[in-house]
Image (cartoon, rainbow, N blue to C red):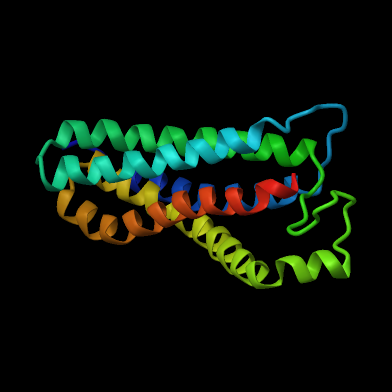
Length: 190
């Protein structure tokens, strides 16, 4: 168990809250910035793959702790999943500040969904939007969950870690998998 003073613990918790607010606000603000002259069209399949890798790592990490009872392997896998999430975020931000928004259903890539294009995707559009909205909301919610879950493990408070992880794991897994599905659904319109 890591020894940490109560004042330092309060400071770390404050930083988690601050990061949990700053990261989504910064990402949202960066959507208003467009840096021209860079072709980053190669990034979406890369960061979607990173999301998929994160999902696989999360599942293996749960297996490592729940079935194998290998705390060290679990710790390494979870750190790797966090690193993957950071890499995803860097790729995602880089792409979105250098590229125009992709419009779901814009078959001819003219930036406008014609009535014919709307009709062509009408049934899948609602699924896409619901999945995207839930993905975005939960990706914001998972930030403090992951950080607080990690903090409890770092401090050796495994009973608290397990209680928080019970919520963190399915949300993080959903975010990782839904990120891949969202990419697969929008990729024809890039």
